[in-house]
Image (cartoon, rainbow, N blue to C red; front, side, top):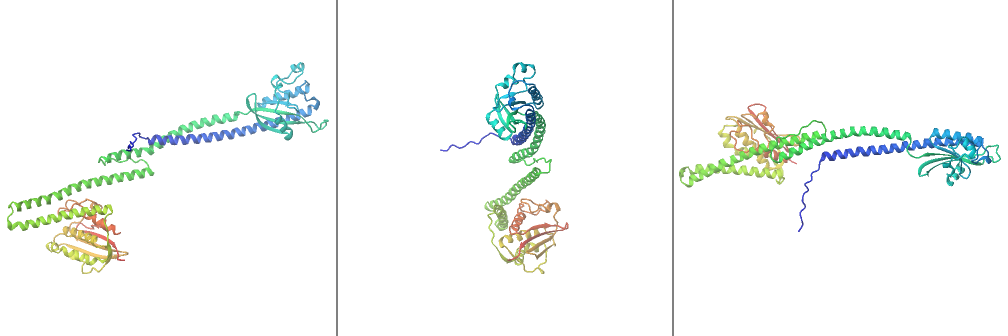
Length: 499
């Protein structure tokens, strides 16, 4: 037996998620930019530093070449070497590096530390630190081959850059153009003062930008999430039947469009709910009244309250009420089928003029009773349409039923059918009380009934015109009502011409 999965009760926070996401994007962007900037500046700084070391080692190499001779490339004391050591000290201080001179074997023979009278007595120009130091043979080889070499190495446990320049024997020397030694300069490979300054400035600016960015992200995220939170709250209230809540809109972007659409939906739901309640009340009344009458009349016939000579009269009333209930049920079933898409159309080509005249004849008694004048029949011409005959029959019947019902005594009904491009336009106009402009925009709504003064004689539930509109639009046509004066109303619909 499978165990059903329990739905997690953990609730995510979209505001926190958006904020963290944007904050991470900011941090990653600054980290990448900062790292790239530091690497580029450090590379530039090291390149400038090594170029400076090259330049100074070349100058010292020339100085040594012009001062010393091949046989004098050792660590014994001489005044010329003392001058060179002084130069090494000055250059080392200026370029913040350790500069020294080596013989051909890579052994240091001159450095910056051992100067003055102590060198004379000790007969050595090298300090204790440099005395034991020996430059790598591979680097010496590179210097001899290329005259100048740059390498990265580890000295006394520290990562350093070392630059070497060959000392070439002077032209007057016996070993002319031979390499008699080399000058090396060592600098720490760590970040330079320039890089440190750039790092400090970058991080100071980055912190300020991040603070400003986080504030902007907070405001932006709050602005994005607030409407969604309001919609969520509204949806929960809609779920319990309260459609009064509306989303507050303070912007003019996509979220504002969503808010407007949500509010429009709320208005439509509110209107539909009011219509539904009105419909339930109307249908309840429409069902209760005839059923009560039917039950009362039948009970009266059965128990003898109604005499036999009047039974046919009351049975006629019962029959009318049953038909009225049947029409209401059929209207509701048709509406349900059309809304669900289950209503099957069977269109064909036929003459709608004949159908109009045939339907009009079914209202002959009511027309004569109210002495209504029928206009336009003498001028109407045959018009062929492509439509479902049964559906259009109901459309025309409902419109004539309304027209006869609301036409005043001794009034008129004007009928016309004309071709308009690829459509046939049918118009049914009647005299009597017109339709208020406020009602025109809502007259085809589901469950909606016109104002009380116009619907005193109406026994419907507000579905007739709604179904008429659906049927016409299912054919690709349109229907509308107009009332150009207070004494007439007109309904116009179009259908596609016969193919």
